[in-house]
Length: 460
Ligand code: AMP
Image (cartoon, rainbow, N blue to C red; front, side, top):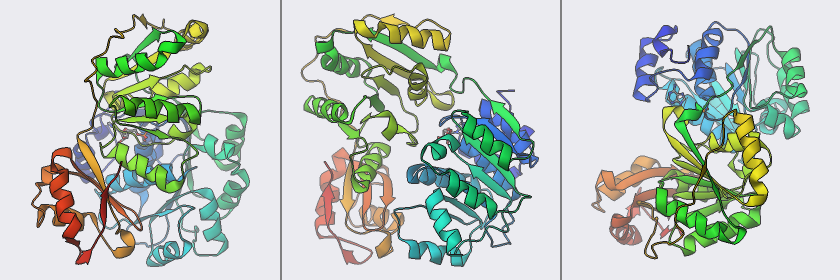
């Protein structure tokens, strides 16, 4: 069952080809258990976390029912945060490539209202957004849900934690009762069950206990003295040299300190936590996703909902008290069949936590001998790419192709030297290979993008 192929489902040939071009060859356990029912139009309540392939499960389901000729909102996905909504939107767009002319819009808070109204007026088939902003649009009648066929609640537990219950209720009331309702939640508190009872019809329950196939994640624990924690962290980086890592810390202050420590030792790291403003947060995420920063130092809260693909390592700078949090943290590596490593530092006082984790996972925690603390003073972990920020964005009608065109055309870079391009309203970010940075900057200092002189700077 867990290894089922997508071809066993009633999906179009174009969609099967698309899935295989995305590298989705087999269903994940969550998909294998939920997709047959979802595609039959049944309500489903699934206990699934980030990394389980849940987005594709509901994405394929809702896309299957869209009628592209009817320009009304037919599917609505509610997400707790703007970041999750962004990721979900991206994943559904990838899946929608198999069908032409499907329009998806994001309606999230923290963004100007007017342009969203404009997009809605042009017609959209799918809306992905955060509850507060969806409620605003419903109240102003700029959004109508009477043609809705699928309603998805993603990370429903988190939306309840954030106090969205009344808002969700108000949204439900404006949808046809004939809709299919899909509920995804990492945990199953009573409140989730209430919501399901009230708003779902005979839902199929899907629980995949271990979505991240524990054997794909190598888990090792290292006992260290308190004062050795920082050096041990460096030793782990030097030993494993992971290309992308999240280091988990308990507090914001600790995140900042650890990131500074790593940078002082030539490991390009950035901290992410609740004290960053939206712009700083966007920049950190852009740089991590485009490979110009290889280490994120994060709190659990900040790491929730991050779309981190193919993370090679998760490091616990300190172990959490709750084994469930540990399992959630390490689930970010070794995704969808790729091998990952989870490394944890602990002191003698935290032995109980190591044991609790072993009990929870029903397998002993392997305590490894710390790698030597004699480090190579010349060691550095510098990413391959560097990010350049440009002061033009969506508002200037700049598209990724314009930036790519300028850099590969007049600036003379090769396409292979240019990485991810992210466009925001007022600025854009482009990753270029470190070796091509000077050439790119020399051009950008005098050159133009879309006929406009621009300002560019390397982000540090
Ligand atoms: P999610 O749990 O929706 O956040 O998905 C986790 C990651 O797995 C995403 O990066 C997806 O692109 C990827 N993914 C989803 N389904 C599959 C699949 N069947 N095979 C391989 N990767 C997948």
